[in-house]
Length: 78
Image (cartoon, rainbow, N blue to C red):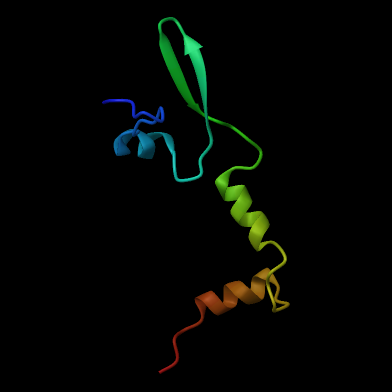
């Protein structure tokens, strides 16, 4: 694999999937003994947490958890 003139490389898909590196995932680089270490940055603002925060408070119906669960378990009407 070659490094581009902009210093970019492509992380193979198998490694991205194995280590959970998705678009917008932040990574860090560290120097090692004659190597460079790439590590997924662990932050309090992970992708999942950002999605949850974006959705928080957007519900428009006032329903209890029990009411929502009853809807998901209801028999389909025919």
